[in-house]
Image 1 (cartoon, rainbow, N blue to C red):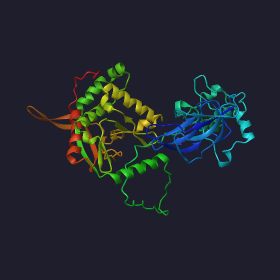
Image 2: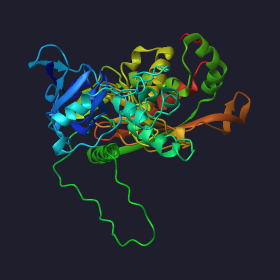
Image 3: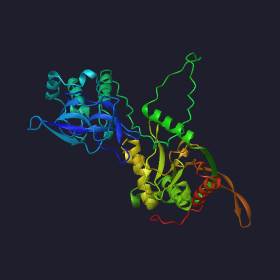
Image 4: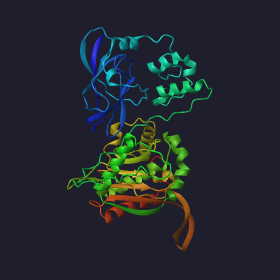
Length: 458
């Protein structure tokens, strides 16, 4: 057999370390290639490290809660090869988002015992196959539980999986088993989402931060206490740091986007047939934002101490709410180099991978300006918080039909128009009212001047 070292893989250009959040298998347990063995978390996304080959985990070199540098040894792994006692290095080249079953781990399980190794290497006789007819992967633990409960492959294929690509997790199979006896169909379990957060904030001043007021334990009335998950804690810290770092100012502009709405409604079907991409309002508005940034590059900047970094590339972040209620900001890199079709493809791809937890650390890093669509929730406007270390963020309100005054050649008329508010929050250390207000006005001008005769290919 060959013993190899599993290293903490590189998870993006800007990621140097990660926190070990969950050891998914016990020392001595048998695993299959690509089966996740440990959950790790960075300041941007959560990921899982898979087994490099079929074999068994000899020992853990880390514990839950450890902060580990990229390239460090996290575990020793027995590949089951012919060279006994040989030691080599196997760095996992990429992380996966495959949802796995979680097993309880304690200090006593970090060292394998002969009994654990024997049990882990025992074959799963009469257990369902590793892959079902649908092609879905089943881990050894799920197959073992299915075997114990007398669940055949045909029945196992009907279990709804909440893992990546519909995989069945330990929670899924146990939930199914608990409800199987009562004849109640299993209820879907919310899949755990990744916990990325936006780019870390710029350092704040050394001034002592005010502590949050304590809530009295003797509050009247019933209430629930909900512990913040890791992502919510990091979002909270990021937002507080942003407000402490930047003096926020917000400018508002109302835009008549009737031409844009009419063109999109008339061409969305043909656009999808021709390009294979759904046409939402997001790439259309992103295009206007990029053009306005090119006109006013001062908003495409960040602050480093008393220096202003003027970014030549436009990396446009698009804040998105996850099904869990948390927030993530994937980035369209070099957004100025895409036409409308390219922007639509980028928007759809990032949004889909955000919902399914498949974003990589690089997907949420390096943004230079951010847009946030508060209109998704029916809000007409908002005052967004700057995504540090950027200096501006634009909130897009809901598009609503309402009467508006139009100046015509022979007098003013009242007509029903599609209207939208744009809210631009900017860092007043760097962006003054003239620049911040002119920029958002220019975005509105591009939206209002949308060409109804524009070809789809442009």
